[in-house]
Amino acid sequence: MTLALEATVPERGLDVALDVADGETLALVGPNGAGKSSVLSLIAGTLRPSAGRITLEGRLLSTGALLVPPHDRAVTTLAQDPVLFPHLSVAQNIAFGLRAQGTPRRRAREEASWWLSEIGLGDLADRRPSQLSGGQAQRVAIARALAASPRLLLLDEPMAALDIDVAPALRELLRRVLAERTTILVTHDVLDVVTLADRVAVLEGGRLVESGPTADVLARPQQQFTARLAGVNLLTGTWDGHTVDGTLAGMMHESVAAGTRVRAAVRPAHVDLLEDDAHPSPGTMVLARQVTDLEPRGDAVRVRAGEIAADLTPQLVARQRLRPGDEVRLGIRAADVAIYPAR
Amino acid sequence: MLLPALLGALFVLLPLVAMATRVQWGSFAELITSESSLQALRLSLQTSATSALACVILGVPLALLLARTSFPGLSLLRSLVLIPLVLPPVVGGIALLYTVGRQGLLGQQLELLGIQITFSTTAVVIAQTFVALPFLVISLEGALRTAGTRYEIAAASLGARPSRVLATITLPLVLPALLSGTVLSFARALGEFGATITFAGSLQGTTRTLPLEIYLQRESDPQAAVALSFVLMIVAVLIIAVARRRVTA
View 1 (cartoon, rainbow over the protein chains, first blue to last red):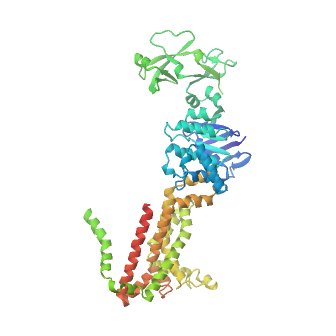
View 2 (view 1 turned 90 degrees about the vertical axis):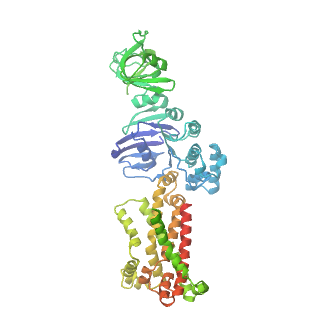
View 3 (view 1 turned 45 degrees about the vertical axis):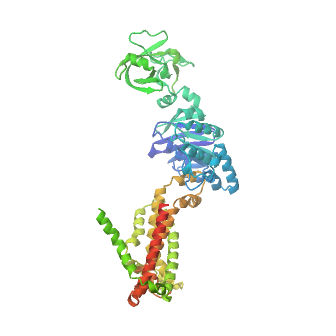
């Protein structure tokens, strides 16, 4: 285990334990105020835990009594703001970490120019940060962080401040350079999670509520936050052997005793609206709900009705003249519902 | 609005013009190159430069302490540092006299070590540094606060130890403010009169700086006093020009 963290910070309501394996990228997700930034501060050494211990590659970094200073941790943070040093050239910025760690000037310069071509900015070595675009500056910040060869890289929403047209190229760069690096990535973007993260840890109210390999967590979300990230409706109930709470049937791939708490996930696109007195087709369950609100969603209209969201075609919404407050019948086919034990 | 503004500008400008009209240009060179004038000018430049250097040596750590740390009594310390700015210089001179003077707080210990400061060139430098230090500290502390700590945090996260962060990030980022603060404290030292005459006296070639020389000449040779005043005024104008260039750069 490369990073092992166990820490409490009562004044921030934080009580968390997590591990990151060697070479792994862990996505740390959660609602605003869940404590993600506090976890990064704990690891970076700018926040001292009240109790607990943080070790990196076996070296003790923090306890309630000990705090190795930030510069001596081999942990580098990259935030959404690149924070390039304005008085240094691009190449000097990239070489900064190397020089700080005692690399001779010449070698640091060579490595910086290698990184410049790696990020595709080989001809901008002598520019000042003020002469770069936002996307270029963030590329340089990535190169600067990686050139310092940290044992652990902390990425705090590295693409949040970028235009959507430069984010894809940057995400691709990160995917390439993070492959073998031990990284914690804080993000709100599911695309970052699926392209960059090996594992996902979900933080809520200062506690780790869910974690696992990315594909598993997104396929079987346990928390409403994770379900939203995965883009599914999440219902929780009791398995009676055939259905959830007698109303919802679905695909159950493991044998579960009746009376077990289970969760049911269904995509909004698979939730249908039954028009007027239409009869549901066989295998379709009907849930009666009241419309809470409507919002545009790409080429569909997302209709929220209680805890369920349905993506309907604009034509259907127009035909039915849906308004908040309307009573509706939602049809869900059993084949579209994944049911799995609650944890 | 415009009229009071013009009056204000005139209020500053008119005395300078009035003085310039009284300069006897025919004997100007002769007046400012007399033995005692040259000595005073040389002494003024030497002591002011030394004081400016002392302000940097003492003021940079003080500004860093005020801008980058927090401890009980910090705001009190910040107020104390400003005292020389508002204290009448002659009071500052008396305070220094009772600190390192023969009868002063540290005077006896210094005497035992064979060091006598009062009425020496060192005393001039101490008096000038005392009054000029706040200029550098204020200018630098403001710049440090404006620059913020984000670059320093980023540098530490890349593995730079605090001394390296200070040398390669913090100080280069506030260099313009450090330079203008140094120029301002040099200017304040150059004009120093009250604390110097109280604490260092007026010995020709040792403690009689240009402002003291002007004050003495005013009695015996008004023409020389005016000529020397004009020289100091030119220096002041040059300093303002340099300081403004640095600030706007």
